[in-house]
Image (tube, rainbow, N blue to C red; front, side, top):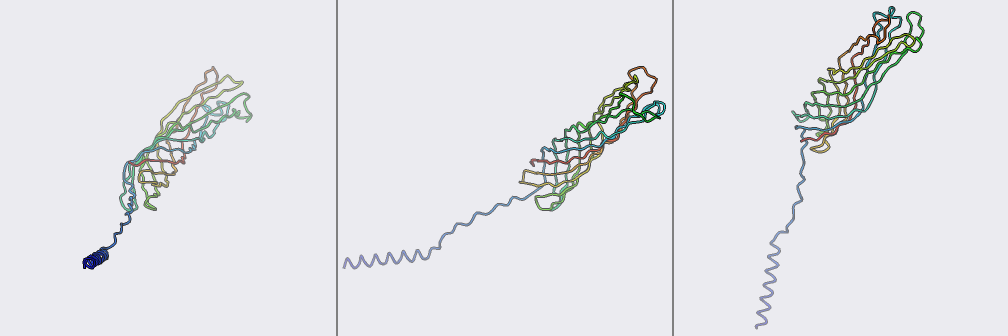
Length: 262
């Protein structure tokens, strides 16, 4: 009898446990929720840039009081050149709509862009070269800076096509000299000038991550100053003075820039 009761109790326990297990639903761990970081262009940023610069400046030597009285024709040439350029930029963007961004940016870049032109005197009126004579003129863009507005369109949430324009400043070094060769005549001058003007351009900027911005852009600068210098000979001579003049300096800049957005 005892054995029969123990067996019956064991069977009841097993049956009850099985029923309880069947009533409990299995447990599943939910998959992790992917966190989507929204791209927002609003904020302050700063960074550095590097690229190439090309300048265009025309120089002119005008024998004074005039070509015929001096006995030589004027000499003209282009003192533009090319060089590497690099600097810093900083600005602020406002994302004013899902696909539009406006901003304000300032930058400063160092360069050494320019060249010189040298030519012999040509006698007026015979047209022959004056033996041993020369006139040399040069210009070099030392640095350029700007303060610009930007307007951008978001091709994708993290890729912006933009245009930019504003005011510009640049420092240009000028130098000129000449020598009459067999004629006792020589002049020399050198000076620098900070010139104002305007700049315009555009580019494509990629938000690599929510904090890093990479761009490629083109900027065209026009520095509106046309310096003129009148220099007399350092040696006694019946010839007049030399008038040196340069045109406005125009510069094209193509560069890449990396910025950190705070």
